Image (cartoon, rainbow, N blue to C red; front, side, top):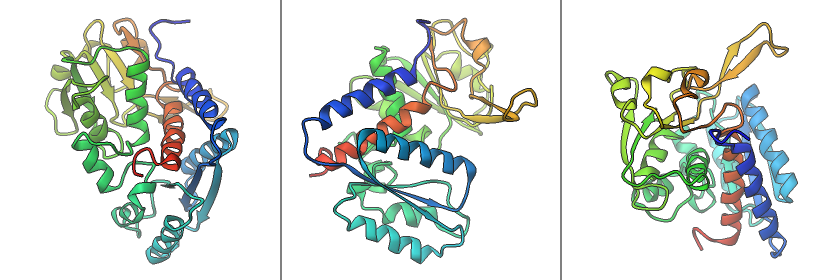
Length: 291
């Protein structure tokens, strides 16, 4: 076992077992509605993975696939239906949505008490305020990895590369909180940041979520840094059977020698996203966040 590797597959497996154990003492069946609009190949894969995990845990799940041409008002009506379905505790809208649909309108239509993806303004606002809420699954998974690997975060310099609403902003807010596994001094770098390496070289923890394969190089980090790679980028590779390979936002081979801990891609943050979705759905079923 490589002591430098943060193994998301291992930790997600532990979380799955914890959920199974908790469910064995409960009479409730968590319910999750997964809404997929259109036929985006990557989105279809993600939904199938989530459905598979639901089946493994014995959750009640509904996979609702709608054509890409669905009018926005019909999608809003569909969400309303699941908002009022007592069997459904969590609702997930698989992103991205077709261009003719206003993503903001759709995400805000989900009952914030069933928003297990953590994208509703109520949940994002409560996250910023440090209050109990549903946390977006990928940032929640990153935080869980830092906790499970006992990474010292208090007073440390954390650099987040990327400012998306899905990863960058939420994880920055998490790491700012005066809480266990957080309490960091946080810097957010993005496309307009000058000389990003000036920031990353000072960082104790780097969370790369920029969507550029191999962006973070070995000469951009200091010895002993903890590196969390959120990137999942497809790169053409004729030597691969699939015709492509998956690359993270971190140049793993360059950064590994200097890092104290590092996530691989795949097998790092990815498996944690689904594990945290399952945990959020269980929390929703039990009324842990909103009673």
